[in-house]
Image (tube, rainbow, N blue to C red):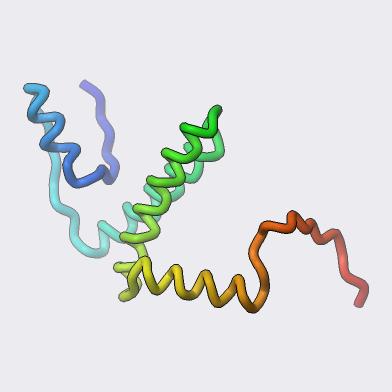
Length: 107
């Protein structure tokens, strides 16, 4: 019997039940949920870093984006607001498109 002890997407318990399997799941408190979201985003970032193909990488990035959406809500915001902040930072500081790697700066 596999033990997972991790946050899963909302439909996973239903999918497992439709396969005729028994499961144990619970609804987390807000505090527990926030802690588990932070663990889950780290897990998904690690899976992205280990992805061996572009298809796998994009799938993991989709999971990261879904978690960013959930974490934005935890901070009283929205994914749209995160996007707005991202855009403002890109306008003021640039993006990462030019591939600059800063070595050092003289004082």
